[in-house]
Each structure stands twice: as C-alpha cells, then as structure tokens.
Image 1 (cartoon, rainbow, N blue to C red):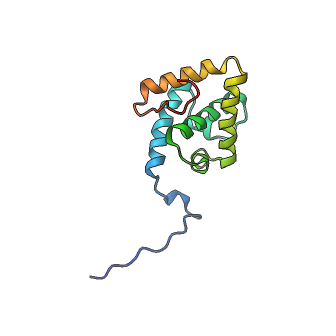
Image 2: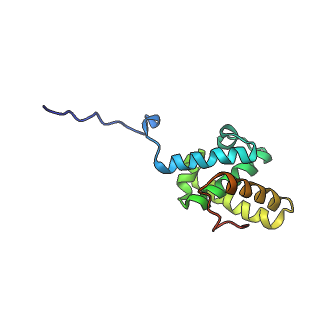
Image 3: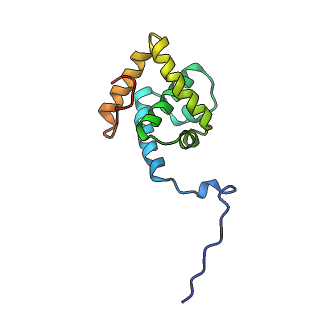
Length: 130
C-alpha cells in the first residue's frame, strides 16, 4: 500500500488551518478567568478600541500573560492581534501606572487576588504586587 503525502498548504493564505499550540490553549484558559475578573470579553480586548477603559484592561492582560507564561512579546501580540511593540508598551504602562496612578494599585491587586483564587496555576513571582 502506498501512502500519498498531503498537499502542501500555504498557512499564510489559510491561517485558520493552523492548530493552536499548547501555549495558546493555556493563554485562552488564563484569559477566560481574566474576563471574569475584569468583566470584559474577548471582543473588547482583542478589538481595536482605544477607549481608556478597554486599553487599561488590555494592557493589564498583556502584562499578566507576559509574567505568567514568560513567552515572547511577539507570541503575546499574536494572541491579542497586536504586534510585539504594543505588548512591550503595555508592560511599561502597567509598571508606570502602578507608580503614578493612585487608583491603579487597588485595581491591580483586586484582579491579581481574583486570579490567585480562581486560576490554580497562577504564578505571582514576577508581579509588582504580591
């Protein structure tokens, strides 16, 4: 019996054919918990909205994913539909907001506490507030 090789598929043309990696699945589970913690959804965080309330949630999500999974900015950007520079900027903005904004540390700690309680694999070793 002879086996035929499957035809080559150009994944740039058919991106939906790419199977999600294990990291993508872990990030998706993490984000489901994050959505519950912040009251947001996939549409708001992966969308193009530049409203401050959406941007704050999106930046915190990128920061937490970066610290939780210790993956590259490019991988995180791919998940959110953004580029690596946006993720780098988001992590810097979260650190800056912790120092400058009086209300942000409270918001940050509420989200982190919710994630600690509801996401079993949550790792707090690299976070600003523990």
